[in-house]
Length: 262
Length: 265
Image (cartoon, rainbow over all chains, first blue to last red; front, side, top):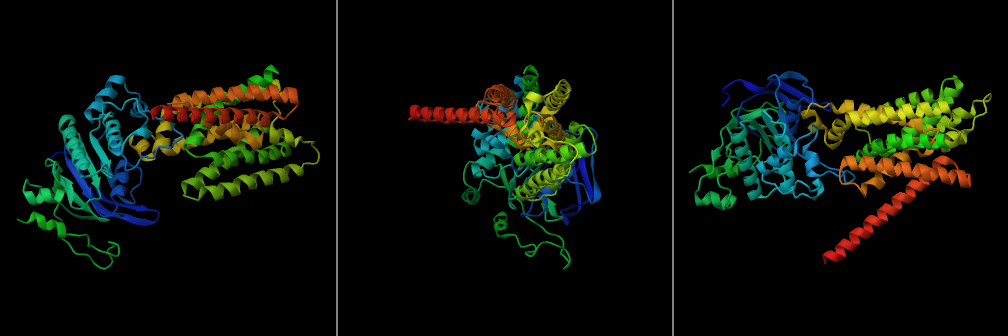
């Protein structure tokens, strides 16, 4: 699904962080309205890729190109708010640019937390906090939404609900979505493409949607309403000894993938 | 007397909002290192017959840049700043002792001498404080976003390094203008204590900055009265009053929380 001109593209992108090459020759296109999920083990460079696309980290080789005037809505992996900083949700949503009360109320309703507007950010639950972060990203009217492990710390129904929300946002606003997840196998079913990253792109493809069959329900619990899907890794290449995949190599657990075989 | 009060209030207007960022970004020691370096600036200014204001601002700026660069490289900050803050102070004191021809009233620079503020001093203090306050108002939203999360700022088109530089320059200017009023040893206290006290009252970042200015202003007025009546040094007197306000507000907030908890049971 790389139809249409790319909103943002990486060409042979390599990034070094504190002297170590974290990303090597990554090619990536994201088209309008596309949902792309990036999976990979810890330390595989997922966040680095996101930060390089944002322009926070410079490319050591290759390049990142964006369409002119591209608006990016970013949801960071963690947002620590110092206890010394009083920050009501209403004020947070107006950062850095002032929003009207109407816009703020609408954005909070859109992400399903209409009642938190006057609360301090510190009093929100994990799920509410993530939704408020998403609301802030949406208020910049983005062409591309970038989310760095937004479902961390949510339980399975919480993850499914959040994924349904992202899918709904994409359908109503038409923005593209780039989502990073540390879960190697269970991904958002609305993803058009899943990219497995481990320093470089290992494989990519469409996810297979979890069916309604009882064995899947047994695996993922009830009530996810089709928001979750499985991704079957298909590594089509082998590595020389000098290719750094860390000491473990490609040893993430593929056992779960058996459930996709009928 | 009027001149002293005006000078003190002008300093409070600058230290209020800047102090909030010092507290939010956990830069307390950073303020200390920059302020302590001011004594070295005084020594250099006297040795080269520069204006004290220019000398302290230059040295404070150099110090603030060093600290900010080291922080950017991921040095362990408490040790680094501990070394830098005290080394700068020690070097400054040694350098001042090498100035035989000028009679230097060192205690005025260490503890402040608000009653000796001249007409020209007042003009510099008001101009410097006005500059810092203006900078805070102008960059407020960008500074706040960059304080919250640097990647978030980047995505919104704000360069966090530039905002860090704004704070660094503002800090150097505040140190230079507050030297005469508060003294090098306690400038950092004037940044932190009013902001920390304001936290108990404020429910938004803007309210906290305004409360910090108000609390700083009250502390200046109270400290000035104390200094006049009891003949105490102005800097410590102002900071002592600020500390009293802090203690009262924190105790009040704890009491309120206790009563609310009881009522909730």
